[in-house]
Image (cartoon, rainbow, N blue to C red; front, side, top):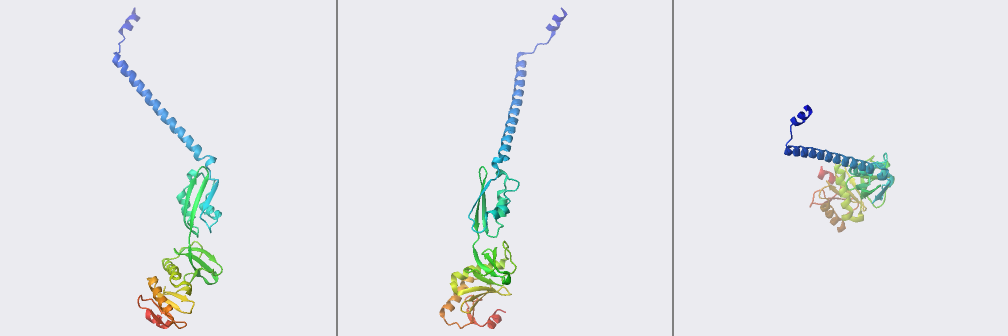
Length: 270
């Protein structure tokens, strides 16, 4: 009898409260399930990512080099450090590799692209030489318009304009100073205006620029400014045919060309 009275004394839960409790429990279980699913998906994605990224399948196995005519594939691959510790294609720092490749003397620009699953494609654009600098016994430095030393030749190489007194002991890959770049710009313009009559460009100790002609005459430009106008004025005098051997055409002052001796040139600009 006592047990029956205890059962009867147990408080009853209202049906609405019971339903509410059930709903709360279900929602809590659903949230836990969603969390477990998200965690499971993340773990799965991580495992797949790791399998792809660190798999031997995606290791760099071959390199295609395009556009190169001077730097060899071995030189490009070495400076880019491509095969260091069997790199994974996905993890390569392409922009850094491009910068490293562009340090090579002959390379103007480089682009590096991934070709899945295990290949790199490197495209380089070569620099264009415009002149060679006479370094005396050290040889001849071939340079481009941007002042990059491309290579050192033991002897004069026909087909390139010569520049004297612009530098010595130069090395491939070296970048020359701003004045040298101005002098190289002169070297680029001279063949266009004067053609084959111009032999070489001579830089003075005061950074003045002179052009030596095959006729033993010299064009004194002075500074490396207004080069085209100065050369056109000098060419008009050359074409006139009145020059004597060893005379100097002084066009250092634009629109005021003078045919002089070297002593007069020095006094005019001193």
